[in-house]
Length: 444
Image 1 (tube, rainbow, N blue to C red):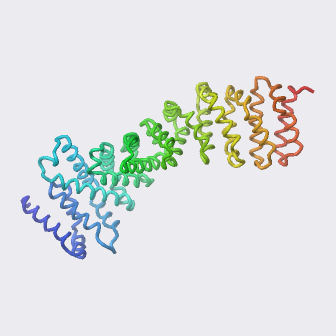
Image 2: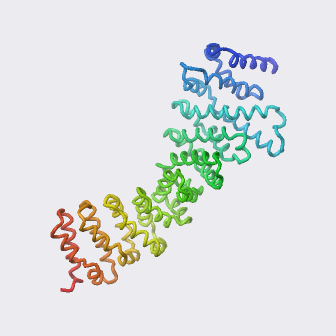
Image 3: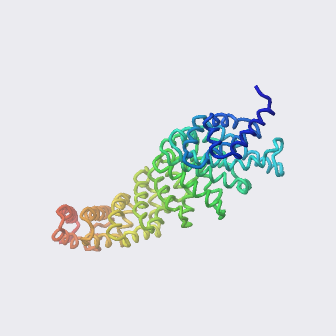
């Protein structure tokens, strides 16, 4: 109904009231339904959309008692997220264009510098949205909004970082916060968040700057939240190439290894596609390197056991595990374990010993004498001693020369001591059963 000049002058008056007046006058603008008007202005061309962002930023940052979350809810009711995302995308697009043109400002609008300034404010608003209540997060979790935000961070280059670093990090933080909301996980999955975030870990792998480190931190936190309970998203991450990035973080002793290790271990429990990706990067041997890490040794060994159990053809896996160094790692892990750690290591070891060739090789190692020593040690719980007996039985039954196995390890004498002295009835019964099974190979 009004000419462009009139609308622009009215917007300037509104902007002056927001920034030149006292806080109570800004509150009056809100009371007079000013927020819906400003939200509608976000769709306008510059300078109106920039003036709208400035006014909204002033309103959101009003001093107490009104909390910011209340203003976020008003913006969400006006469906502001979609318009803010489009405005943010334009700011990044303008700067990309300026890099192509090799000029200091975007052509045409004359508002490029202001657009870059607005990008940080809009990103800050999204960061507030991600910390607000369910209504606000639902507005932010719209497919078009998430796709726009993810598209922005996925295409950010090092050149863009110099100018738009603050906005980029705030977008990532907002996505990370949203990934911690169970109600938003499905929306993020449908927006292909995992597929778009994983490459950011490798893009900044060789960059030691503070900015690259912050990008890596936020991306890892978001991926951890997305993948920790979903095999579907774990598979998406594996297919996007997350395995090599997780291995790099673990090997580099990064603080993020505490997120990388459980994520990498979850992949072994995931789908066949996850394990296929692990195999490409020698994941089986990598799990064995984790056996030397306190608190993670039993988790890693369980990954090996689960992977072996899921394999239709175990021969390639046995070939890897039967490497001299890997056998040494397996044996030394049991030898070095204290009673508490050993109680968690023996159950997956039982599953690993189901592989006949590997079993026979371990039966010739120090592992047998170590297990027998622990069998006689009552610091170990009865359940653990029973499991140790099961391991010994598995190695005895698959030994190429059972008679030699018995005599080499003085098995009958050890079992007799267990039968006569162990305080657990169940352990004594299992030991006696094994003694009876070995009689056929015992020289009387």
